[in-house]
Length: 318
Ligand code: RIB
Ligand code: CA
Image 1: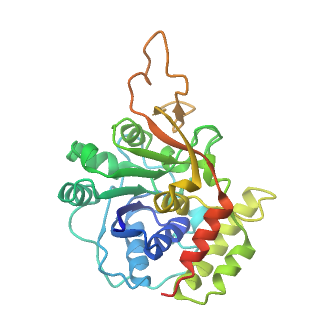
Image 2: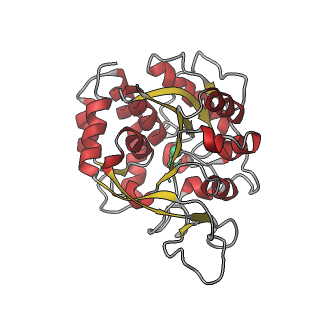
Image 3: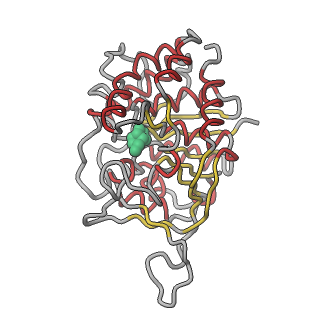
């Protein structure tokens, strides 16, 4: 049976590449998209999520509008410089025909997970506000969810918005600390591994040669994102593959090496958004990590095998 997932997302170019990947993966059944601010504001994230399910001929997949603001901190600048003002590389995609469902993202997550306990994995590729709000609505999610896999954080490497913080965590550090300390089965797919996965222009051209609507769309929205990465990360000759890595983990966890440790998120000061694991765990004096649940932290990845998997799935006929 395919693994049911809800993708919480801020599409976003790499979010789009992740969602289209998930929709092609026979191991997965996408039962809903929930939207959040981050790369763009939540309204546009919702429109883009609707565009994606319609592009994939899956208008049946519900899209639920998420939080417009973080739990505590003010809304930070959205990532227009990385994803374009429209979130799709300033490519002016036609408007979607569909509308989001009435329940909020948090309500949708609670309804779906509690109706199918043990069946649904939450895959987050944006800030974690919706997951924290869903937990506040229904604390029993902790036992009912099959798992939580999030693209976010940086355990043993620098961040990408500050030296401390990765973007998804930085934009709602309070929600992230709630998610990391909730006690549900949680896997962090952070910059430790996503910066090891690089899609080059040749790789994207190879995808394009499949000649499908999906690969044409990815080829169309990609240049803006690729230009940002090549200009920002001199010598990279490609782009970091963040959100598709979280989907790849659900498809095939053997692609990754992990370690287990409690993770806390720093919520104020110069290191706001830092995801700090406790790899010692044997302190004389209790601290903020003591007795906190373990998270699975991805620390290495077989990037070549992941890219081959991505290519084999995303080039499948539409
Ligand atoms: O730091 C990378 C993450 O932030 C990705 O999810 C990207 O889409 C942005 O949301
Ligand atoms: Ca994202």
